[in-house]
Length: 306
Image (cartoon, rainbow, N blue to C red; front, side, top):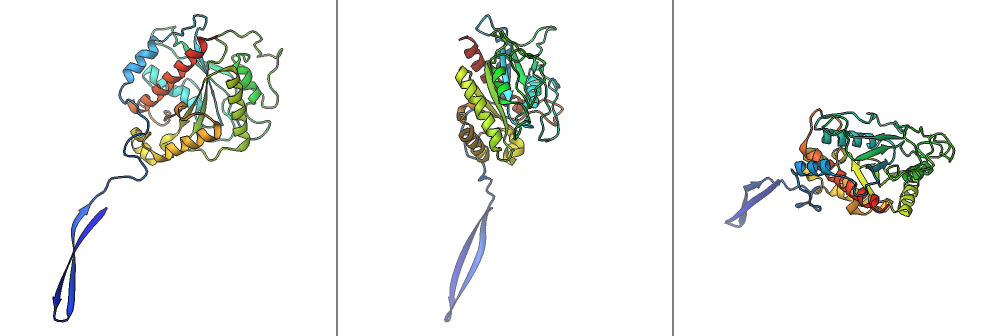
């Protein structure tokens, strides 16, 4: 609120009298928490083009039956919810492909290494990209998925259905170890999932994440990051999702995350998973589709070199 006053003075005998009158009241709608213009450009409302691109997508490497996306990150950041959200968008309705926990427990809900396929419109057909959701990274030794197991998964050595053991890593000869992985068994893009609303990351969890990033870098696997819960982290984004790239708070969160883990800003994508909705939202879909398309393109480029 901006108030403008006018003061007039008059002299009477030896005294001076002043009158102050409110002449203008302005309501200022500018918020100090959002930028005037977005710092990253995004096309809102182009969902049909993105959906068509994904429907027509096929890996360039004919030996690869699909692009494999591996999701990793701390417990409770929305890995399973992201898979469900992608499935919602591609199916055009609400789904529940990957069982997700609604609690904020510090222990991982996902225990099994499972490949999630997404059905196409025609019966028996699937999109040529799959997701693997793994046990969350937890603070301390003997808890959560082991970094060594994720490294094995990157190379395709972990079989579908393997139950993670927080105490010991998978070894050659163990049940669940794939000794001869194909191109399709390997991971083609590694995606870190992290919550924009999470407290400061524990040092032991951060160290595990850095080890996984280094292992992927040695293999040449491209990497992206998804920042979830942007509505809970920023009130302006909760009111209007299109403020995502105007939010100063979210930009700082992304910058801090980039600095701590070493993932470039242009490889960090903020979005909102479907959680309490019972109908699709085109703005939610836009952010999910932008992230999904980038994952598939990065993974396809890598698979084409194998």
